[in-house]
Length: 297
Image (tube, rainbow, N blue to C red; front, side, top):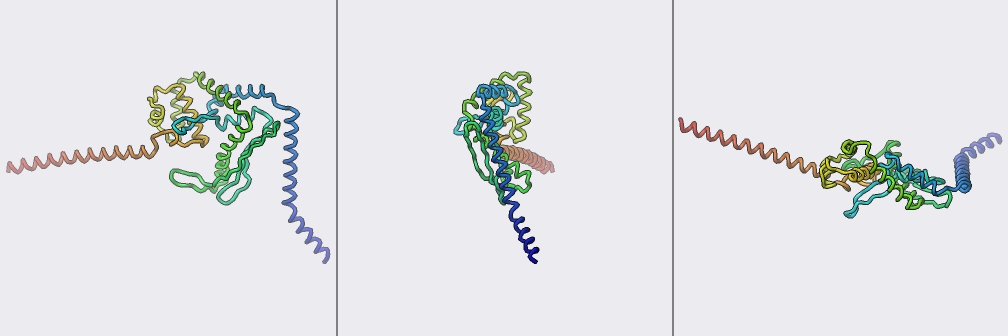
């Protein structure tokens, strides 16, 4: 009997301890990993000159330069800044940094997440904790997310913007300024593909956001065929803003879907009016014929 009691007590103890043991073990592993990173950062400090050169070199690649900036209108002016992709490139080449986005906890209908950036050499640590609702705005309605993949992508999307902000607080601002300058030089000197071909590709990309050629022309106040290299760069920045979720279509373009619908309704009304007018003329002609027939009779 006593052996049974001992076995039962042992089972209860085993059931109560696993969570705390696992948590303690994971915490110890994380602590040792961080200590190792700090030790290596102190042993091999970054060479800022080499780090800067790596960042500049990365902006000489056209594919990276196209994704380096975003822009959106504010108070009648266009605000341009480093994109999420550029922040990641800078952090990778700056060296001795750890950064990322992690989901701290998930509740019914929302997640608690954190974006962080840590310079292991200077011990500058920036974190941004935020909540993400498990919903997505689709048109005028709100779609509730239940698929784990959709929830993950939504958290990652919101976290990316906080991550960019955290990295920009850790890395000196002039690094981003020089990277943007180099990216613009790369885009201006990229003449391998004809301008009209690039514009056609841009129009196809914007079509995915229901942005028409007419909306682009109204944005820049000129015909599509006369767009310049500067317009192409601006369009690239706008597209990055839409893709990264920094801005919305209505932030950049005056002609919205609602206006297009109103314009189409006006055209339909005008067509119906002309159609009604034609019927009335025909009716009048029939009346004249009928009157002439009565006179002959």
